[in-house]
Image 1 (cartoon, rainbow, N blue to C red):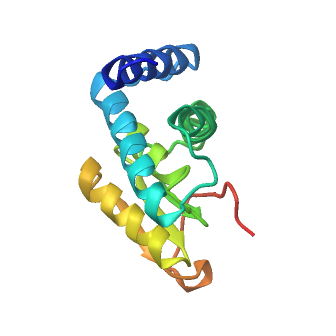
Image 2 (cartoon, rainbow, N blue to C red):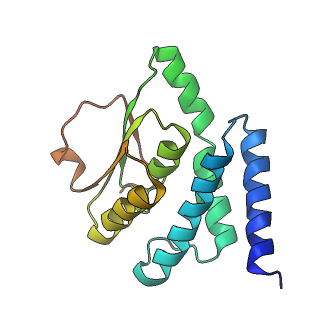
Length: 159
C-alpha cells in the first residue's frame, strides 16, 4: 500500500498528464486547487454523501478529469462567441461539478452553482471559500428562481 504522500504525488502526476493531453495549459496553482477540491470532496463525502463514488481514484477520474474534458470545448465556444468573460450557471451542481472545475480553470468567468439540496449548496459554498474562488457563487435554490441572463448553462446530472 502506498503512503498518502506517494498517492498525492501520483494524483498530481495523473492530473498534470491529463490536462496536458487535453491542451488546457493549467498552471501549477490551478492544478493544486483541483487537488485541494478533491481533498474537500473526499472529506465531506464521508459525512454528507455528496457522491456515490467513494475512492479518491474514482473521484479524480470520474469527477475531476471528466469535468476537465469540457474545458477545451467551452473555451473554443466562448472564443467563437467573442466572449472573454462568461456568466455560467451550473444547474443541479451537486458537489460543484462541473461548476467548481470551470471556476478553477476559467478564473475570469463568473460561475453560479445551484442545487436544491442544502448540504450540497453548503459544500459548494465551503469549497468556494477554501479554494479562493471569488468569481463563483453557491445558491441553495431552484433554478427557475435565479435571475438571469447567463451566457452558458451546464448540467451534469440534473433530473
